[in-house]
Structure formats: structure tokens, C-alpha cells
Length: 155
Ligand code: FES
Picture 1 (cartoon, rainbow, N blue to C red):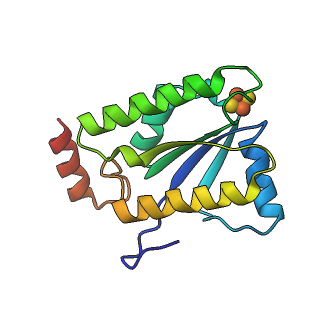
Picture 2 (cartoon, helix red, strand yellow):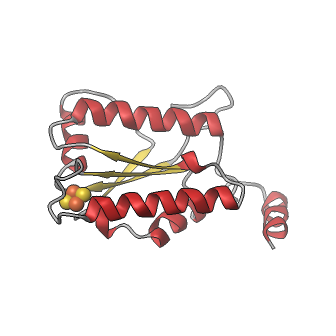
């Protein structure tokens, strides 16, 4: 899903194995398309996803990060998805404090049978990030002169 400028948002999705990963698989199997630029990382529970994972993923060049967990009350570890929600909210506040868009990080909750909904929510995320543009922290694809300027800006 490239925008008219040729920008294709790179999104990392941390998906709980018990629900969202299965939903993503179901979406693929049901031919419910979602953007291929969404890279899925399976985690045993979204409660395993830490603030540092989210921040580091953006720092390493992702334009957006999606955390996809079980429905509220359905987490196999009882409260993992609740902790994940708190961490996502915390990172969103951190992003705003440093002048980045909170929308770059989002949490969704789906069950294993919600393949269509997963595809829709993932596509919405990709559209949001496409509208925001590239992650300003991402300097690896920029020419060396721009990379130097970005490093100076941050220091
Ligand atoms: Fe799915 Fe915890 S087991 S979010």
C-alpha cells in the first residue's frame, strides 16, 4: 500500500499466538487481504511486549507498531493484554512528549476467529501511518547528509 509519494509504511505487529496470530492466519487463509508491509511477530502473550520493545522497534525504523492481543477478559495469562494496553498507552504519551504522533503505536484486541476484523484493523493502521508519513526517527534509508542532520537534531 504505497501512497502517491511512493511511501510504503513499514509496520511491525506483535501478535499474541493464542488469538491475533491465528486471526492473521485466518485472514490470509480467507483471502482477506491486509497490507504485506505489516510484518508479524508472534509472541506468547501481548503481556510479554515491553515498553522497550515498542520504542526500539520505532527507533530501528518501523513507521508504526501494532500490538494485537486477545479480547478483554480472554487473555490466556489473565491480565497480559491489560498490561499491554497500559504499556501501549504509556508509549503513546512518550511519543507525544517528544513530538511524534501517538497514532504510530496502537493496540487492538481480536479473537482467533476474527480474521476479517484483523485484516480491517491492520489495513486501517496502514492507512493511518501512510497519512502520517515516514517515521522521523528512521534515518537509515536517508542519504548520509540527511542522516547526519537527523543525528545533530536529536543531540
Ligand atoms: Fe493473548 Fe495474553 S494470551 S493477549
